[in-house]
Image (cartoon, rainbow, N blue to C red; front, side):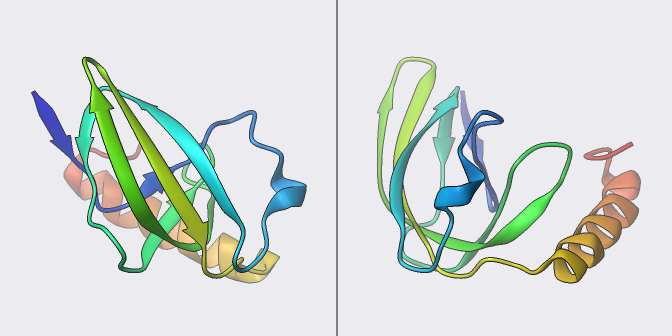
Length: 99
C-alpha cells in the first residue's frame, strides 16, 4: 500500500543547525510513499513542528521504505513556526491527523 503525502517529515534526530535555504539532504521514510516532485511542500520535524518549505528532488522506493532527496527552500522564524503548528493542529483535530 502506498501512502500519499503532501507534507514532508524529517527525522527526529536530524541536526537542525544544518537547515538553511538551498541545503540538500536525503531522508528515509517508513512505508512506501508518494510525494509531489519539485514543488514547495511544508516540512516538519516532530509533533507537528513545521520548519519551513522544501521541495522533493527525487524519490526511490523499496519494500516498506521511501528514500527522498530534498532541498530546503525556506526556514521559518520562531513566530511563524508557532502559527503553523497552531493552525495545523486546529485543523487536524477535524480530520484525525492531530490530537
